Image (tube, rainbow, N blue to C red):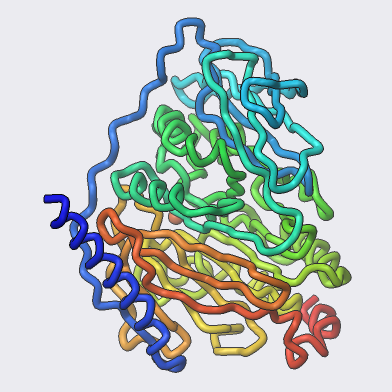
Length: 453
Ligand SMILES: [Fe+2]
């Protein structure tokens, strides 16, 4: 039995290696539609309940997000009133430092949220493990590792999570890989108006989201707007997933879009909002212009990446064209600033494009990648436009997750890992080189920024 298990493991390793090796054999000009056929969708998980919590002050749904270069926001919920205090230190069980933040809550139809707390702690040392507890509750200790202050830097990127058996598998695969930060291009809980699903989602992702910063932007499932009875969009999302929009080098006026630096400014990450106004002259558009101008003037930024929810490039028949208006409004700005890659969700499948701009291959345009494959209950988007356009390098309707390792100032390795049942299999891999380090794209960059304005 043990031998059988060992040999099947060995077979999996060989298959994974063969799969990875075959990638290098694919001619660079070939457009690939993966022939992989996956099993049917896994069921939605039962709602995760609160652990034993007699006084209602046990922290739950804990997650963290970076604020500036050396601070971390800790967010958590308690059922009853509790202090918005985070105590922390670098030794388990010892919390010499303490910060008290603030508490909010919200109502949605008949639902009343728990007490939603957040506190920003720091300054923190880079690449250091901190132990912390919330609301002075002795019941649970958490820990996280701060990101490094220099390259290399390891992102995990995945959107459209939901909370199904596939989501669970994706989370297990992410947990098994060393990473510094998770980027999420929208559609988190698939609560879809049922607010207890937000709570359940918070519990599902807590083991990961309390130990590494989760930087998110919104998708359509976060809107939750209803005529008359719930006229304000993003109520739950904004209350539960407060991001550092008001921090950083270019503060934004809205939690729905923001930017931040990592690795000492070597990587600039722009989180755009697909479901708030993006037209020329809108606050988001004006903020993006300011942000890109600030990055353009900085020599330290080696890579610039952006995240949106609705993809601007997509050959899947699901949501085709849903990012067109935003693309029209903002693509020129990103192109002028030589943004290296744009990651999107929304389409429940994986697709990687070559460098593109204005609907065509362009050696100075971003690599566009759709990574809306976290595992949600709506299932996969399996129907593609045929024949596959040459600018679509690889596409596959499977769940999975992506990893972006920015190795140095010129090279980043992108890898897509399919959820092949319970094993993460490398199905697509490509080196992305910095456009800023490419003289052919860089010589007219400042002129291009001016032109695109
Ligand atoms: Fe979506």
